Image (cartoon, rainbow, N blue to C red; front, side, top):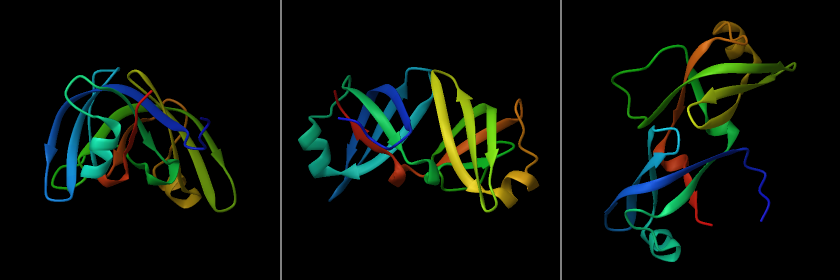
Amino acid sequence: MTLSIRNQLPGTVTAVTPGDAMATVKVRLDGGQDLTAAITLDAVEDLGLSQGSEVRALVKSTEVSLATAPIHGVSIRNQLPGTVTGVATGAAMATVRIAVEGGELTSAITAESATELALTTGTPVVALIKSTEVALATA
């Protein structure tokens, strides 16, 4: 299956914490970072997820926010450090490519934000991703 979601990071499930209807799934990405996904219990069952399951974390580029330093005191669970490898700016939007350990992410942000953050190749950034915006896929 081919997907339009650019951000696909491989990893291994390290924990599944079920709730009433949703579960949090902790994933150790191949680059060594930890990522949390909040998905339905039905999805956990359908995918057969348990500790040790190999998965791909999928995130739309519009759901990847950027900061120029780690942020404390925020509910966003996933903060992946990286380095900007490219910026393509249009009239309204910018596409920012970020190298992270074990892969690459793409973020779609406003051109104004890219300018205010002074994003250029080599700029260190932190990719911020809400756990509810991470989908998981198995092979």
